[in-house]
Image 1: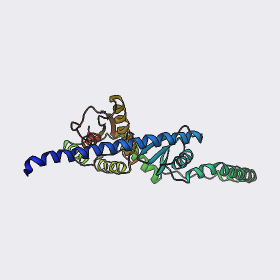
Image 2: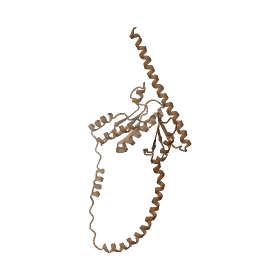
Image 3: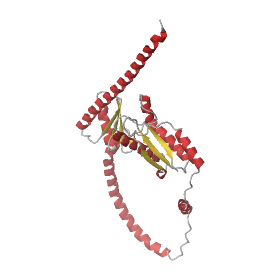
Image 4: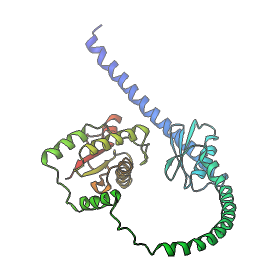
Length: 295
């Protein structure tokens, strides 16, 4: 048997089956996510939680609500939907624990206790007022003696020094400093997000922390955060998604201590791909966030 004649068709068949399997797996996952999203939204509507956003990655759900209490309640509802493996609750400040809802519910009772304490304290204050009036006469007699001249405290001196530093112009970075900062930022791994959203993944947040550490090492440089998407979906949708992702990275950098005045952001959508998209790996390469040192 001539192997040169037989092997090429066999290789083509194997590669074709692998590609078909990848497409089928992707389509199957998208079908599961779509089905679970519809079921979860129906369960939330039945529970009276209409202002809640649900996003699925496979069988895992991220539930976002206007308050922590609603987020915890909604996550419990979605977690009970058949087929859902896990559900995470996100409030205005991010991921919340299951005890957050109970803490908010207990807040009104705590306020009632505080009101009762305030009423009791009022009586004590009225009694103290009489003692203060008596003490006033003694203080007026004591004012006859001269008061010592006040001298600035260490804290006041430090505040004055801080004000002087703020008035000083910011030092411009040298070309070498800008180039070194750009090299360090390029070495940072790609920042990842939850599919078709601007929500950072756990690994994505770690990478943003690395970027914040680099910017802390180069405090004079200013940076533009640039968002890029793949070509799946409409051009308008991808443009808006790239803008939201770039802005989300800026917000996370500020949370990590980077001065917002050093940061700007821009979305490019699918307009500037790294490679021509022929495979799923190519699409993944084109989904990225880049840092451009502008000053």
